[in-house]
Length: 136
Figure 1 (cartoon, rainbow, N blue to C red):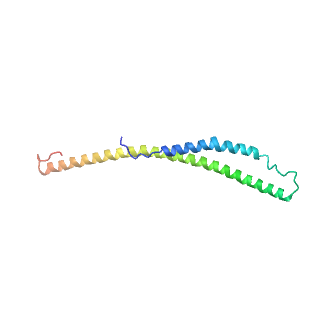
Figure 2 (cartoon, rainbow, N blue to C red; figure 1 turned 135 degrees about the vertical axis):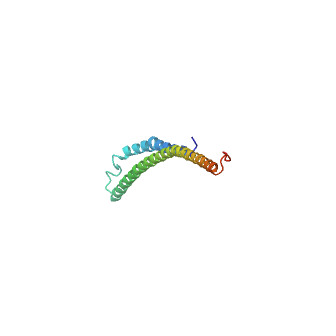
């Protein structure tokens, strides 16, 4: 079998593995811990009658909510990106194999065509001048 086209997919596979590991071993546990800490709501200023404190508390709660949504979207996007990199690597590896098979088929077809053309040329020469044609 010929070599075909060989794409080095190690980088894609390493990237996919690294993103999956970073997401599951670092980001998700840290996010989970923060979510537990912040899950009870904003605790400061409960007994403070100041409107400014309550406004700050509301802004802080909104910031926590937006940050939480951003982290969740980031984790989802990281998973999608890691999965896509793994799928692209697998598809490239599969196409390398198909490329090599097609290259072998094309090489065989060209060799067969060349052989057939030579046989036809020899046959034509034999018809024109019998006993003079010879294979090259």
